[in-house]
Structure formats: C-alpha cells, structure tokens
Image (cartoon, rainbow, N blue to C red):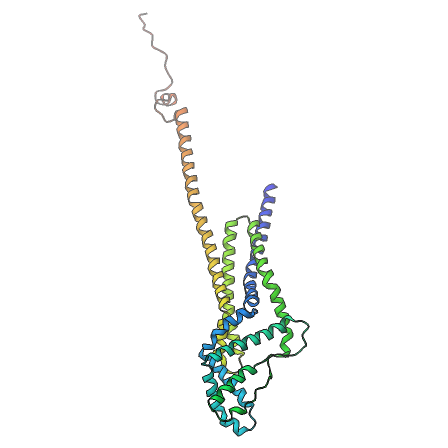
Length: 340
C-alpha cells in the first residue's frame, strides 16, 4: 500500500509540474510583447529617439515629400495653379528633406503625434473623437524655403493651424482598452512566468530534467515571438493604403521592433543554453557514479569469493575427504601382522 501511494504522489507531482512549466513558457512571449509595447513604443522619449534617425532614410524622405507636397498643393485655390505648381512643390519638398531643418521638423512632428496619441490613450475622460495633431510648423518651414527659392505662387500657400487626424475616432476606444490591458500585462505577465517556472521546478520529482524542459519551452517561446514579428510586419505593410509608401512603413516597423527582435533571440539563446547545460551536467553526473558502482560491485564479489574459498574447501579439491572416498572407497582399518 505505501508503494501505491508513493506512485500516485509521484504522478501527481509530475502532472502539476508539467502544467506549471507549460503555463510559464506560454507567458514568456506574451510578457515580452507587453513589456515592449509599454516600455518602448509607449514611451515618448524612446520612441522619438528610435525614429529620429529615420529622417536620413531615402524611403522615409520620399514618403514625406509626397505627403507634404500633395497636402500643400491641395491648399491652392485654382486647379490650373495646382497643376502648374505640383512638380515644383514636390521638388522643393524633396530638397527640404535633405536639410537640417527637416531633421528638426521630423523630430518635432513625431513627438507631437506621439504625445497626442498617448494623451488620448491614457486619459479616459477625454472627449470622444479622433486623435489629431497640428503640423502647421512643418508647412510653414516648407513655405519659407519655397519663397526663398522664388518658386511661383509659393507665397499663396496658406499656413493654418489645421488639425490632422492620426487615429480615427472609431479606433480610439479599442486602442485605449488595449493600452490599459498592455500596461497591466507588462508588469504581471513576466512576474507570473517567473513564479510559475520556479514553482514547477520545485514541485518536480526530477528537477534537472524539468529545468531542461523549461529551457526548451523558453527557447520555443522566443522562436514564436520572432515569427510573430515577421508576420506582424507583413500584415502591417499590407494595410498601408498606398504601395509607394510601403518601403517607408517597413523601415519604421523594423526600427520600432528592433528591441522586440533582440528580445526574441535572447530568449531563444537563453533557453537553449539552460537546456544544454542541464543535459551536460546530467551526463557528467551519471558517468562517474556508474563507474564507482561497477567498481564497488566487482570488489565486493572478489572479496566474497576470497572468503568462501578460504573458509570451505571446494568439493572438487583433490585433498578433500569426499574426493578420497569417491576415488579409493571407504577408509580401511590398519592391517595386523598374523605372526603376532
């Protein structure tokens, strides 16, 4: 009966350990994704620091030139004037994107957009509506350069503080709920993953094997996270309305997800290292133990044989009485001389 109870307890511990380890491994990529979203993308300083160097990227410059140029041309009054000024405006804007003033305007615009989006996501009492940002400073700088270059009709480009929607009103509520969920998950998911992994290893009967399985699970989670980044890139570029702007969107996506890709590869390498270390230490621990056990067993056998041979003669020994009786018959009494 005690052996049955021990077997049932062992199976229960193994099942509980496996469940805890699986849950921990599932939470690892989710926690990494939530932490990246809150501490990297949702932080204005880190976001601006990541996208500021993109002002020198050719794809980003072309996309900005087309967007700002088309917007400036649409502000003109007469259609013939628009058609005449369109190529000059685009060339002037492309020239502007190669100046230091564009770097300043690019950083200021990204900071303004990011601040506006964060305020809308964090302020639950904000009025319903789209998230907007004022890009009038960028238009004013473009107009100043066009006037300095004596481009026709440049002085007729109006500079007004118009609000440009960066997030539609229909998506604000969903983004706000998702941000709150990510904000909570960024703290609790990594903590829960660590607690579950430690508990699963502590409950396990064979802890080294369980630790190796945990390492493999973490490596698998890192691999899945890397795959998710690749899939997310394809989906993001597919949602870009204008195909000519997809290269710029790809550059921005790659820049923002650089930390997430590094995290995924770190998890993969860490998990494989832990699993390999457990495997090597297990093999190293079993080798000398088996040798010692073999030597101990052989020495005990030799000692037992030596004691047996010293205490009792072998049945096949020629000097034993049993062997004499079998070869010469029973012992005879001594012979008596008849003359006596």
